Length: 606
Figure 1 (tube, rainbow, N blue to C red):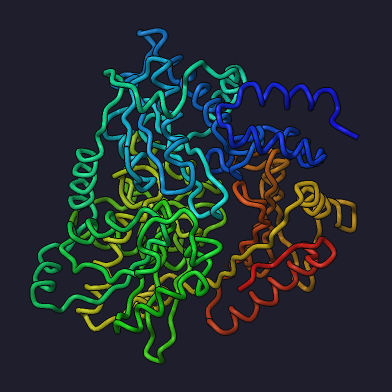
Figure 2: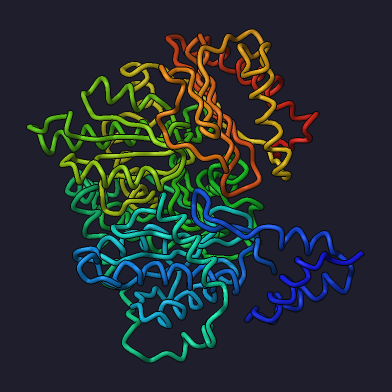
């Protein structure tokens, strides 16, 4: 049957341009095997910026991550950065015509980072290059600290081992948001032809003045800033450590970059070293002990950490994902069971800890000038805290690109930024860098644990105190795998037309729907003009249902993985009753709205 003329021409062009013999051979083998459907699927679309930059499977073709798409993305980004400085009168004040480039420990990450660096050098842009693996927040910090024009982190975060990604930061260290993301995407499309000699080998051979290696200085500056802003009990921590009374804590890097960086984080807080999960502490791109290297997955991902903790009589577990921007934790209970904290639970713990200790350090501060926020799919318990304490609160779209940008906006307006989080175990505490950060979060959590245990309390105990103070919020967040984008779109389109009048539904099972917000279409029935306040994106699926009983359910398609996610929350007075009502609501949502069997949705294994 073969390929149509347009696809064949694109394939021929690709083979001519590709600088990687491996992916050229892969593509030629697919053609030789007659696997034309697979070839066409890889050339139907070009990889685009999602909620965390470019992310996809490492394989041949423009829809994936490979040497050529990394080169093309870097050329387009370099051109867009250079454009900022074309007119000196309009160039951003105090910003250097330079970028930072870092990487994680995945397959091809080192090569991709060098190709990116070579592309910027070819454009005459200075590169601050991290030659070894680093946490993602180090790139965000470097851009902010050195006032660079942009940053690139080569990482796929917690995705499976065959994936990689290309995360972009803009001036001041926030992830890119509209309209910059669209401008960069357009610049990429205008600069697809690869420049001659832009390769990893060319970067290795480069001896000019456009490359700096600032990792040592950046590390020192980062930890100094964290120690000054995030550590509240340094003296008590050091006294406890010297007396041998520190709380034993296990840490897993999940085969990622965290080993040395978390060790130094605990050190600058004056805390005891962690006990490593030996099987997972070193960087390994094959992630041999976990199919999904994401501590958010719960007991399955933390199995080895729990075994290590029990073998060492340690009551606390801390975990990073492979690029150390996410943070998870667990605590051993009196009955021997392990409580793995959800992202929402850690969010309220960090929000409370940050505010209460900042207030003690600054007793005259006006709470209304202090800002906290989270995303629309994260627990509104933070809003309850903010309302009770008199803090400024706001919600954003899903993704730290929105949270970091809002943090900077509020600081520009003269407010003090305290904290923000997303339920997917991402936390941003103070303004060391404007992206989620599992490195400084680890130090803060360990300090909080040690203070609580000194007072005869536990983390779970503090969480229950916060429920008593701010209200009990039950939540259930999970997902189904959905590997077909057309099917994903069909599921959401059905929701928009399944009501008795051919519109949105009025109820889900026995639960009455009070309002609906659709950030794909821009519809919001809770607003007088039925128009959503938050930004709308027709290219992503996201609907929120507000129920008459106070329950809130958001359904969305992931921007980085083949997942249909659901986020459900209900506030109540009695824990058991609230949990039971939420469970019934979740069942109704799954059965009536998602129809997993009919739509062949695949549930996670645990």
